[in-house]
Structures are given as structure tokens and as C-alpha cells.
Length: 364
Image (cartoon, rainbow, N blue to C red; front, side):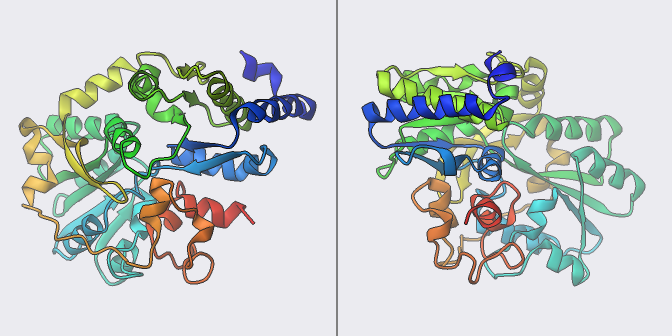
């Protein structure tokens, strides 16, 4: 594969950059969007933006699952944390996301006496529930299709054990409906997409063929090494210059056209698509997952009859615009002044996959 032997020396990178420069004389300025938080961080960490031709602009889209979780959902979770004998478990990033009041997050609630624990996987939450039958254990199931199979597996495990003190608050989201909503919005101005390798490893590279088939936009499923990203950007630039949009799979060493059938079956066995609210994108049909009725005993929404209040986002935070790709993190008036990883105003500064956190850590 080209990646294995083409990006081992700086002179090879210079060949790619020279070719990009030549192509942009044909294309003019182009805007490319990555829709994966891991891509966002990898691009920032490797300094790719600093070596690209000035006519190629990379922007971040709705690729961070923590970032797209709306404020009213965070507020609802914070209220849930006040219930006695209830323990909330979650991936670490979500614990630091503030609700409608800055600095009010799950870590703050834990310091105030609420029962909150970070876990590395939903199976860790299962083990906590087994070890503490006196507690109601809730796992915050946030993520895209990448984490959906693991969340489904933990629900199946809880059902197999008849673990009645465990449930999942399903906050999972589906990538395609969100991208369609973004593309069809009036302020959309993107020429091509770096498609998420992790999501594609589950649902397959063909799942992104709608970009070229329905919208005549090029897409490349990319890996996460600098070589992957540079080659994928070159592929996108070439397709734009040739007016030949297509879906290409650069990450073929891991991603197959049909993805991982076992993982997809797990998702389909446990979840079904529902309408969902996204920070920055609003209400989108079929963009979320809900737990099927046969597993209702392990559905936190139903178990505790939860209903989020009206959304009350921080009016000064620009995370919604950053997620849409219409605002750069460094343009936010709060960036590096009021908002920092130590004192985040919005989730884009909290998450290890957030565009603001990436810019803060790596961009000057």
C-alpha cells in the first residue's frame, strides 16, 4: 500500500505538497472538512495545516460526540446525579462538560457528594453494578457508530445476567443523517470530506457513498497517521480538480466496504433509529439510536421517565458554530481568555476530540 512506503522521508512529503500546489492552481481555494474528532486532533498534533498550500483550508465538523450533545441533556444528567443511591458512569470527557451553568459538571457534582465514576468501557460499568447491588448504576452511552456495538454488547450482557440495577442512558448518534443535514443547510460551504475511519470500520466505507452519489461531493475514508491524512487530502484535491467526485477508501488496511457485519448486527439487535437533537445542528430525523422495547428494563430514559428541559445554551459560547464549520476556534472571543481546558465554557474545549481543545493545545 502507498502509505507503507511513500511517507517515510521528508522528500516524499514534499512531492505530495508540490502536487497539491499544482492542483490548487486549477481548483482555486478549497475547503475540506474532517468529521472525526480523532482526525481533528491528529491534524492539529502533526502540524499538517502549517505545511499545506494556503489555498487548502481544513475545517472541523460534527465529529466529536461529546461536543454535539446538547446543553439540556447535560443539565438532565446533572439533575439525575442528585438522586440518592444512584451512580453515574461515563467516559472521562463527558464528566467535564458544563451544563447551562459554567463549571457545573459531573466532576463538580462528584466533589459535592454525588456518585460519579469514569470508566474505560461500558463493561466496566457492568462490573460496578455487579459489585454494588445496593446502587442503581447508569452508563452514559455517548458516541457514534464506533461505540454503539460496545454499548449494545453491555445491554445484552446486563439482560443475560438479569442485572436489574444497571441501565444505559442512550445518547448515541448516527453519522449519515447529520451530514445530510449539514450539507443541505443554507450556509454549507465545503468542497470535500475526510470521512471517519473509526466509524467506517464499523459500518463500512460504502456507507459514505451518498456524498458523491447524492451530493456530488468527494469523500475519502482516511486513517489517522500524518501520511494517511496527507494522501487523503491529495486525493480530495485531485478529485476536485478533475471534477470527478467519488468515495475512496484510503484506510483499506482496516476498513472494508461493508464494515464489520458482527458489529453492525449488534447495533441492529439492540437499537433502532430515532430523531435526535444535536448541538449546532438542531433536530434531525433518524439521527440517533434508541434502545428497543425488549431491553426496556435497561433503558435509563424509560426506567426513570426522563424528559430534558428546554435547551439553555451559553449565549457567549461558539461551540455550535465551530461544530458546523462556520467559525474557527481561534476566532471565538472567549478562546484563551475566558475559555481554556482548565476552565471550559463549552464542550469543544473539554473533549480530547474537540476542535477548540486541539487548537488550544497545538495551534499558535
